[in-house]
Length: 130
Image (cartoon, rainbow, N blue to C red):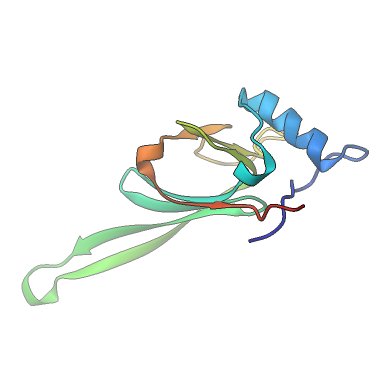
């Protein structure tokens, strides 16, 4: 896992200050460094998604097609254009993207979007730095 970072802080602003600003935007508590989340994998509307700080969210949709001996599983890759800026743990988790920060990004997800703990199958934390 990488050391803690926040992608694309505004010029002249430190990553830490930007992280606090993102927490205020999301109305989230700022977790201690060992509790900061790098990535989550979750289920939303039957689709499996992964949101990782610094990347766009990616997912898959599985669908059974055909009948009898021609029955098979069809897997469709999914993606979203918004870049994940921060993930704040809690119930629900709050995922902040660059949608509207500073400009709108074509996306179907709210910013921040919420994900209940019961839908999360994996949480990856940043490496704690001494």
